[in-house]
Amino acid sequence: MDLIFDKKHVIKGFRLFVLLSLLGFAIVFFFTTTTESFKALFSFKINYIFLALFLVLVDFFLGGLRIHVFFTKEVLKKVSLLDCIKANLANIFVAAVTPSNTGGGAAQLYILTRRGAPFSGAMSVSLINFFSSLLFFLISFLLVFLFTKKGVFSSGITYLVRYSFLIFSIFAILATFILLKPEALGFLSRVLAKITGKIWKKDKEKGERIAGKLKDQVVQFRFYLRHFIYKEKLILFISFVLTIMIYLNKYLIAYVVVKGLGLEAELIQVIYLQVIQFFLLYFSPTPGASGIAEVSSVSLMSTIIPVGFLPAFAILWRFFVTYLGVAVGAWITFRDLNRFFKEKEMQVEDSAKGGGEKLSGKPQLASLD
Image (cartoon, rainbow, N blue to C red):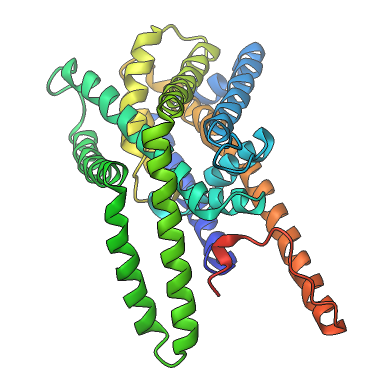
């Protein structure tokens, strides 16, 4: 289990997420707060609160559905839509407490394997959906970039855009290579075998066992990728369409926040700015883009929102787009982890008594030990 989650690291990451978020808001309030700022926050229209909450639920649903469409029983064991929604929310939480969202994928794999999905199959689904997100961001950002006048954004935002574009390009190339040439993963399995052999020099038997399992997972992963790419093109298309819907829904939340503050703005303007916003944040080095998200949102939205309303927008936007998902995802993740550890303790007790039954639903991510 330690291969997936280290509780201390998760807690440390969460504290850093909170600290940097508070720091970001402190900067926002220091530079933009006016007498109308707090009034704007507490005068947010109640009907728009319910509308924003509805869109948050739509976001949770679409995120889960994008995973669920791959589990059709033909190749991958069926995983319920509810469990896929939980996997997506666990992804949101752990991504928020790890740099550059790196831990989110592991959390998603953990929930899916707990529900019976093969590790390699769940990983192939994660990679395909990740590629869909990369493709959407690159296309949408390039379209926005073509219609953006030079010098519109500050030098800080321009620097972040360049950094994000570089990272996106690198990951897009790697993901494309793996998707188009899954047979190249055979090389990866050989490299992993050599690494495990060096790590477990003293325990050769354990090293060989782990190397064998890694090789099997890579072979299965390659099989699932080839199957979806060559035989399930419709599912790939659906994944991309759902990706578009997911992010348009997120952009719409920002528009609802603007309207709820009693401000006027064109929907296309908000979408335009949100494309840049999410492009900047996707590979942000801080946990959950904390600090960067708060400050950059104010910098970008200042082109259509009066200065006094910017702090209220930043708080409400982050609450609906990020904090709610993180809170629900944390509850799901730790609840499931607690259940797993209780099951494991019961297994140990049964083994001590002579029962020795195998743990049901043990995460395959942890099966290398």
